[in-house]
Image (cartoon, rainbow, N blue to C red):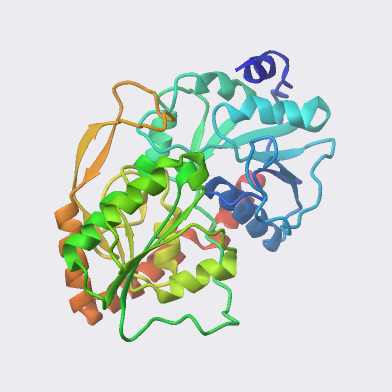
Length: 381
């Protein structure tokens, strides 16, 4: 890609002696409805509420994302002088983002790339992007191990600052006494095959068939990125009236309404860098059925949910996003997931116990105060 090559050659260079200090400039897809955008917003808000001097620079347009969170507020980070840039951009986006920032903004600042990836190895060409940063942060040990396959820059695992739940103003969308509701949430732009929604749909159908008192809600986004995705989901659902596909863009309140209806969250992913949907469900005290592999295993186990077994298989991606050779991901066992669904439906007490333990786990590991504390400690070294 020409823009990438130009950025590699002409992008701003590091100040080798820059140290981590305030102010902190959070750079990322601050207004995009994506996992990377959510992480950048969570980082900004946690640091701001923690009393640090924080600014922001939005990359949504240059990364061709949709500006869903147009009202997300931040002070412009296009300032000169010392400070720290937390760059929420991975791989190929790093040189381009640095070029957009420019030498005046970058000069004398500590550049920390916050990287996101979902496979056991990151692409080899990411080692070129690493030359633009002093160090790399990630949210899971899975991603840390992947990054170390291509870069000798320092890699630090930092806690994800999980946004606190807001009190609900609209109480109309509570769990139904009649329906057992399973919720699946994913973004097609984050790779349809990796998110593996058809496996979840199939597991639900095997567990409950056409039972009208059990329902599956599939909340997907950005199907236009790969139009075949909708056809695959419709084929898996096979016209079942207890499976609902929702492709509308929902804000925070709309998503909270969906979570309010869920008895169980299911994620039969093939791989996750972190597993934000799993963590958010656990935060809400909703039991989760999820593949027992990749980034989510940092915080997800049988004490807080139902892990699903898997086989490791070679990556095959019809969207063409993952092209690395000799890389594997998980193929979750659908029958095991179907069995877990039946067990959780029949055992209200188990659901309540898992939900309570899950909420406690993610609060202890990912409350924003823990993230701010880690940053503050680094700032004062």
